[in-house]
Length: 105
Image 1 (tube, rainbow, N blue to C red):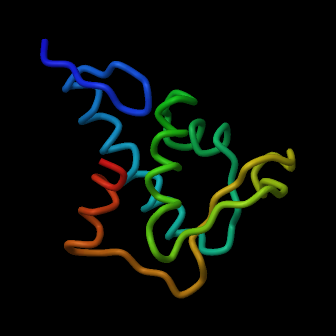
Image 2: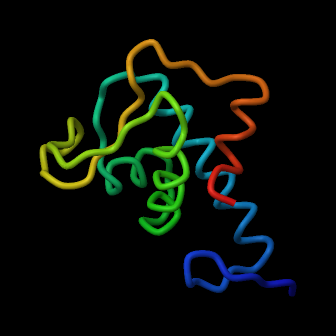
C-alpha cells in the first residue's frame, strides 16, 4: 500500500484521505458554531473521530483564515487546554472549503 510521511508519522494513502475528510468535518462543525472554542476530545467525540484524527484536522483548520486556536476553556467540557474556534463572520465554501480538507499538505 502506498505510504508517505507527514509530521513524522507514516500514513497510508487511505488513512491520509480520511484525515483530509476530518479537516473538512472539523471546519464545517466549527463554522456552525462561531466563537465556540472546542477541545480535541469534544471535537473527536462530536465527529466520531479518533483523538489523532481530530488533532490533525484541527491543526489543518487552525491555519486557515477565519479560524483561531488558543489556550482556554472548552465550551463542551469546560476543561482548559488547546481549543480551536471559527471566528464570527467566517465562512468557507466552494474552493476555500476544499482547501480546508487539504490544508497543511
